[in-house]
Length: 242
Image 1 (cartoon, helix red, strand yellow):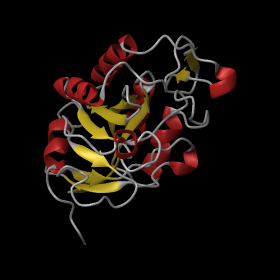
Image 2: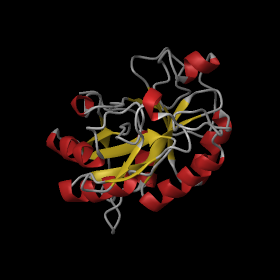
Image 3: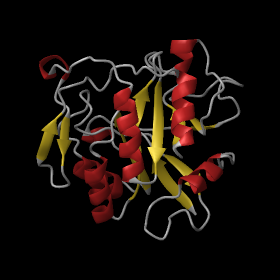
């Protein structure tokens, strides 16, 4: 079956994200706009994924949980899990490798952790979530892959935080697909499937750059979670051209 996917979205936890884009709003808008599988990927943290899980369930939306991690070279990488506990565990690993850079909400905006009904549970202040981690590109990809994540370098062709601009090219590493804004030159994707992502930071951006994925029966598990293995296998196939 053909499923409309969007693996790159932020919430009010990301300091660059709108406070209006709560996990609840993200799930409701994604479902209303016809998306089938949607990921929440705040910067270097999965703390709003529990709220997104509940809201995705309410909206009848299949969900992935993870983060947009920032390597030491300031390359953004999407790390996606099928279960919230896996995403939270990887988030703790990233926090252990984060620099001691406290957050200043006056300069960068709030980093709000909320529950499923948009009640504020915490304002993360001990670290600026966008800061580069003490993990290089290959090391981060390997660590996420070893924990079962679907790994996708984000907006590789963007002038800021994209692998090609930051490193001069996209290196070989443990990743499953490549996200791009435009058409890549031959060989730039290292033979990986190229996908798009909304990188939504405000409600109006949800679903703006989704992509279609052909999935076989069984891509959701018995407990309703998305099979990352099934997604990984589907991403190995070329995109269908209608």
